Image (cartoon, rainbow, N blue to C red):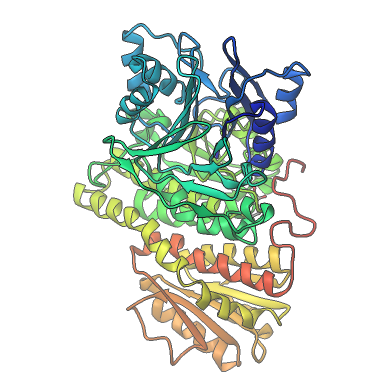
Length: 609
Ligand code: AGP
């Protein structure tokens, strides 16, 4: 997600802002910019691309001024471009704002402001904030910011400056992090501590609903209602490297732990009216187009392909139409049977995977409308698809995909139920039941993430083995595929996923004394069958680690270890089942001293065939 920095003090602000933005590069971005309160005026310089492009644009004549804000943008609304980069100004260019988060009601606010005579220049949601501050400014920047944030729905961490009040920064936060660094006759603001860790370790952590007025010699924190709040000063004990990972030892663990937030961001604005209504306006499909869908074709690679496998089971069960799922590298050289009634979906976290992009282009050549599910705004896949459903997971740095996969699943469930709603395949009661079940998932993932020690203990058994098996039936088989990939790609343990019913057709020959077999048994319709498969493995002395919904079957007697998951609809269980498998692979890799975030031979985005 975006990176925010701010400085006010006695030093020249520009070098400090630039240093801070560079410290936040790890968060992923596509453009950068700064705004400085120079003696003569407010100056804004911004550019698409890396921070070095911004530096070149500024050259040696960098602006003076001891107050400023900076931003690295991770595009959400509006593709990467100079004009969409932050900071954003109002009409008068006397105000500048940087923002991290998503303003859900920005279109309504934008048209309201346009009726008040405001003119917009960018495609972003953030620009609305700058015009709101300008609109409400009557000589008091704090009051203008308070009025502005009261009108905003969604998530924001924002900082505003104005040449009408040069001696202060005003910032506010809701559902997006913002911290204030405390210096001597100077203060800092950032979305994350690495930005100013070289200058101070004393911080205020802004909480949701809080607003701060920051000057060179003071920091006043207030509630939206204007009450002055007393905050404890916190001391940052992390070093810079740890701080980039939010205190976690690896990006992969940080991203696993971010999954509840990623699910909530992906859900935001798409599950309405007390979870009884599904809304995907970005699909922009007419009722006739939706009614005409008679087949779904999903194409992707790796983990994204595994998300497609889960969708196959869910869509066929709920939409009663055939769903093909294909590896992009295979699809391209097959003679695929597509027709006008096929909804063609590509899934790609990076939006740059060469095979997936080629498959998208082939589908377009065949005249199909293409829907992309991707995590990167303005990526090649996003630009070339006809419609895009974004997973708002935020930048995923670790090569092993975790939060992106989880938000891909969530997006595919939202799509499935949305289509079922529009096709009138489910009753209002069934839609509400599904909506409420989806709504529970982030909190249920949180409860699983609290059991890290339990998983770490299970993982310890795996570290001494060079091979392992993941077995499951139905949706559990699709999740077993993802679990096996996670384990092998970061711990280098050779892991294979098998449909449990396939064991006797060959794999059983490989079950030897003690070999780890991860058995996924969350699908109640096939639980008895799965149990007999577990018995087949136990009869050959395999070491069975079972993942099942709590309260379904007492597995203790049948297996060597069981991890009970919170219960939910069977069809939604993949979102819960995969989380301990991600942790399992993580701790197995750590236990084997592997380079978790950057596994050997692998790249985060495979942009070559
Ligand atoms: C998953 O952990 C791997 N990093 C890899 O399989 C990845 O999912 C695959 O390369 C597809 O990437 P994409 O989602 O960016 O297209």
